[in-house]
Length: 435
Ligand code: GDP
Ligand code: IMO
Ligand code: MG
Image (cartoon, rainbow, N blue to C red):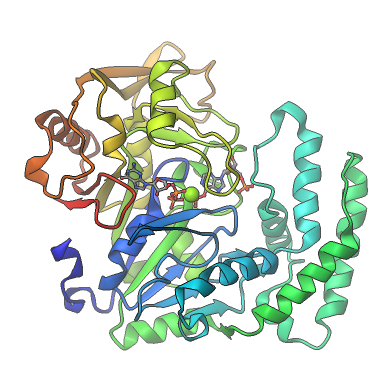
């Protein structure tokens, strides 16, 4: 931990990105929190309350949704970027949840005026769309993410800055009325009281106004010129990216490195390191293909030991072995410079481990993620490795780790061609080993 806290000097005037390389829930929140002492600013660049980023320290466990994971550090400024979608109702609850920590949130949390607002009717549209899809549903978190990004790209959305306009309520009404007609079009049964939802929304909007709205791209670029360092925090994971993920079973934003540029207004040549976070195995919540999913004992053990239940919806996460084909793909798309391996402790106890090193695709062995990775097209090819028994959760140095785990780490580094710099052996801040 010592080396994580060294001074900020070498980081000045740069932006580093931190993002998930799998299907989300890799442990991004924990690592952002661990790294925050090295940065002046933490900036979330996409997603919204579909995210659940868990932090643990001093016996406290806390889940953040829209607020950047640097919020618990005294000096860091936290920014919600233009690429994020905000639900004032969820946000209000998040702020209330921070009250017990005795911090002045307004002094260190700023929101982009260009971030889009999730309306109550966006949530209803999400529910209607999913209900109409039946078995083919995405397994959305139903937070209104898809419909809000649709309105953004469709150029109909409302933004945080609109709250400051005199005719905000009229603009709201026009869009909400349109949504109601669309909900009727879906012809599915939805129980809701829009009036109640709207009252809650407008109360939350009033609360949101207590925070400072900024032109975040201006703020961030000025900060860079002043020599400040920025860590951009991603949500979800690369395999949920709307372009590069397992479409249509994805989220509606660019979760990959490019999303940080568009979601914050930071130019690509300002980006220095890209930290890619991955679990030592794989999980996925919601529908969609998952080649290395394990339906037998191994998958159940990972779920149990890893406590794999969604931090937002509580849904059980599907579990399976590490997929190096998918990991290499994510590393390539993001330009990952450093890997952070999470939850290695969960794999303690297995006699052997399986690692996917190729796909059997239509009778051929391939090493990339093809257009159609559905189970009927793709079968994973596994390499077997020796497991380890030792409990890792109390270990603090790389030397202490069992040899079989070191072999596992070296194998991944060789296949993926990027160094693993950090090994996480438990949910707490302190359970973080630098290599
Ligand atoms: P995020 O969305 O990427 O921030 O990840 P989540 O918070 O949704 O899920 C990660 C879960 O794993 C949380 O419950 C964390 O507290 C927990 N976690 C993070 N790192 C580790 C680790 O190294 N070992 C174990 N056992 N749990 C971890
Ligand atoms: P963090 O940031 C894991 C999944 C949902 C669903 C799909 C689309 O905590 O890693 P959406 O609500 O975006 O329309 O859902 O994406 N999903 C996540 N899975 N972690 C997340 O965020 C997720 N955010 C969305 O389960 O399959
Ligand atoms: Mg999560």
